[in-house]
Image (cartoon, rainbow, N blue to C red; front, side):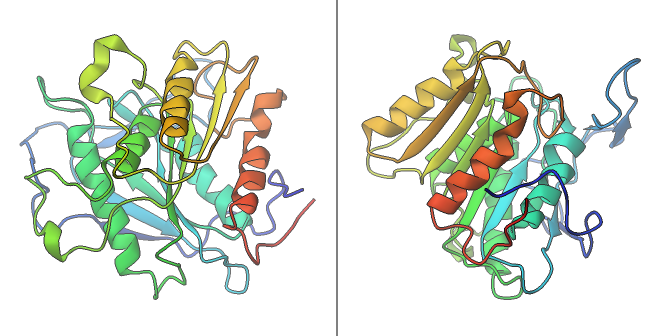
Length: 292
């Protein structure tokens, strides 16, 4: 079994942050709001760190030590209702776990919130597609196989991950120089309590699975008692099955919403172990160190 609770290396090291866009991002909207960390709510877990008013999107790359790299890379999309980003327990701590199993991890800081009247996913999708293309552009430098680049998202970040998977290499007309970019379609997806995939009030934020451009293999984890219903995972799982996409779905009895990498002693908190097993079964962890 591939463990994850004990890190072989002391935290994250060698991280590098890249701006996603040269100059103004596409569809940029002027704002007087300042990006920054939001205060922790009274009595809240200190591992829940929120960043708000993101207008200058970037990606931060975390590399496993040389000799422990599998060639697989995952773009991490933190959640936050498309209003903020839960940057730690759905971001940097996820990168630490992925590095532990030999996977290069990229934490995406995408633009939030959306301007009034715009579907929430539009600008984050542009940012996510750009990040996927940049990962492949740097693949040789980062010891990454460009055919093994996936996406992992939580809640609204899971919605964004679903859009990245379902849109393939189609890009918004606002995307600059799409014809010169590396492909932006993820090779696989990991969706943890994704949102807005079965919400009739959020049809504009619901991607479509197309027979002619199938997403890659997908792993889902959701709690049965989540206020964001597990139907959001179940419906996409079924849509993938209908077009022949291999997928694995875990619906745990308890866990609520937003558990991310928090440790609460419940079966659902072992989702990283289940996910690592699935990644191994897909051939994504070749050469990864095995820990107890």
